[in-house]
Length: 445
Image (cartoon, rainbow, N blue to C red; front, side, top):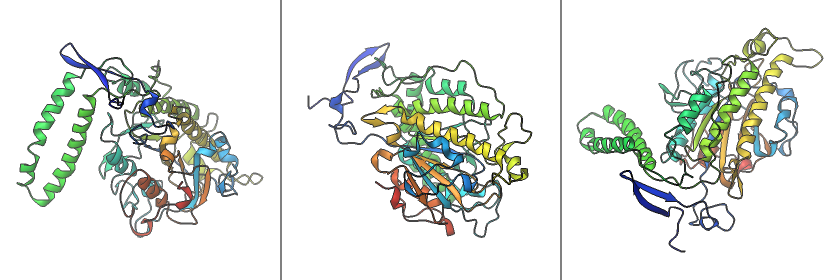
């Protein structure tokens, strides 16, 4: 059986197309521990981001203890079932340096790009998910996927470049059709027929790519730079076409979910946001498990969140500004209510990936999820004391269940560590005070 590999198939012809019948995920294809392929190649490691607005309330969010088994104050009590999957980083900072400080923008932009923005509309460069997708996402059906629970197509924390946001999927029904509709290449199907339309597209694209060298020699330096960026995208698209013309390898953890019968209400109430978040999460989980993508982004709420509490007259953002601190509690009770609902959805997001078995572990074990917000203390909209958190073991490279004190240092250190763990070979990340060049040793296994 030495010539048998996970790519071994039975081949034939059907309807003029090549038909390949794949083999199931056999123990023979894995190493003795079920943690890697028999060839020695590790299970693929995936990357995700999760974003929300309005930070937290320090005295009921930040644990009193550091290291493993950290305590769970009131605002993160919902983490109890998944605490050991989460690394919580507190007392981090986003440094605007000599740039203006557009509220609700500077913090998350620095956390996603490493650079302080010049204003409240300009993105200084590509976001961390795009950098990592360019590293690990070129062979999957989708380079990355972005979804939102806000029902607002403008709610995104992902940018290809300064002017190109990655618009999120906002409708669970439409998202399901995109992922698992007629074009879904089921890796566990008994047969496979290449899509003639994809074959034509790849042929046309290959013909275009053959002309790139001569064109690059005929234009100036700035145009060469623009064309290089453009053709890089085309090469990635060509790789994705190539992948779609092959029979996907069988994946035991891939189970096509039930199609949503209807979209949930599109209002801003916390209940509707939580329901949309859960529906989108379930779809993202199976998109990753079925290897349709290796990079995902989930938006719980936008910066300056407008989530509504039924029976209360003010949305989350207005509440943080206008609600007085309760003298007995020592915090804004309604503002904290919004944070608690947010953290419940984060815990559900983490748990959803932890429930999918993969090899001798879980899908979450082979992921690294990076979560950011726009501010530290919600009431004051600070850029210091900011929380960042990660989930997942990144294929065994990360120790989880840690509370780590950033000691006022740049929050970009968490993002830089994530990039290095995902194979991005860069000596540093960020600019000026946000520039970092060393990974966080406490989280490394």
